[in-house]
Image (cartoon, rainbow, N blue to C red):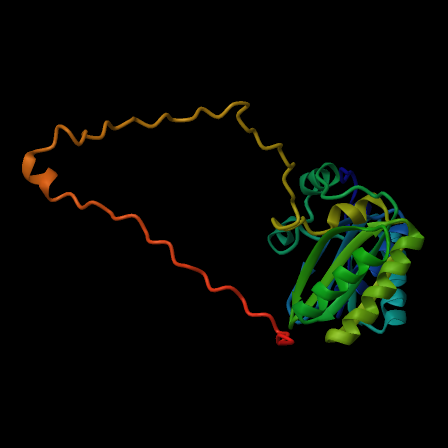
Length: 264
């Protein structure tokens, strides 16, 4: 996206206390008007800010929609609009035209189906919730995100019905293990939202399994035969010391006695 007039350079920010709430808020902002999601900023403690850019009228509508959405989630913190941000503000926020064009071409995931998010306080609860989600429905684990203060979010993708069932199972499992903080299901996420999701961690990038190359025939190493010395060739002294083993005597076995007495 290339900025051609001052009206296209407006900037909007909406801050929430939860990563799933921020993703849901950004989704509503993108669907409410023609804005571009530049990205999001994590400031610790679970606070996340969605950053959008576009025409001033679109930004105003998007920020208002994002504020109402975050208030419905109960996670709203603050919001603001900048009609004409100066280029020097790029040191704080990536708002330049070339960055936005780069963001449109570089994406982490593609929008295929719905996405579900389960946020917990504590890593064990997030792992348990992710395990329950993967086992309860046909969903795929995309990635996970940490936003500070022990808040961790597991993100899955699949059909709407599968994602809904998976999020419900993950919610109960997170409550059983630890503390559940927030959940979110987005039926039809836009490409801009999918591009802004965090990249998968190294543990989630599974390499393609290659078949084990085994040799067809394993060569066997032949052992060398060692010739033993013959008895006739031994010295006379060694022959005299040879011990002749006597045959074992046969021990007469005692016949077993009959348990019945004779009738004599």
